[in-house]
Length: 253
Image (spheres, rainbow, N blue to C red):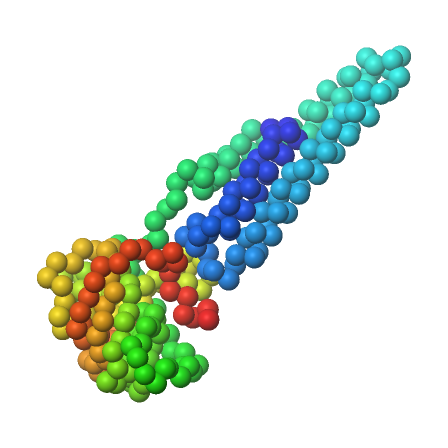
């Protein structure tokens, strides 16, 4: 791998990061708040690639204008310098994650990961006041936190809409789940809501569902880590498509 190849790889990686950051592709990997840093990283890589290529061409042009009587010695020196500039062939492995990013967009973590990890529900420092009227549209982590740690204080008697993907435990009990992020998909952990009431007769794991229902003080424990899982009493439910941001970022707001 010489300087030209290094420039090409850096340019392609920078362009890929800019593409991911300018679309919703980046949300499969990191939280929304990291978008500016991702775009900046892509721009820096492209600038570094262009600078490396400019420097290499400048050195080549300078060598081509040396005196003719030193041509042979200078050619030997260039060969030696080019040899010194080459990096180990293993460097080409850097292209593999680039190809994976370009060719394969991984799906968001789903029910398989969720049911093998305990609920990561955390108690918030406080909760924002909710609208006084109308249905409440809450994230999974927001509803679960209010139901468990705020004891449903502002949820009682209100119509609540929550969207998440379906997960089933070993007994077939359905959960509405969203993977919560602190930074990126590598640290994603599930937050779960158990469903009761008018549950659809057929539920497919990983299918996204908008559940409409009401708060109930009923709770259960996560079979993996004994963490608290609140219930939502479902009055109606409808399938929905995968949202642009499949992760729950309630903790980052």
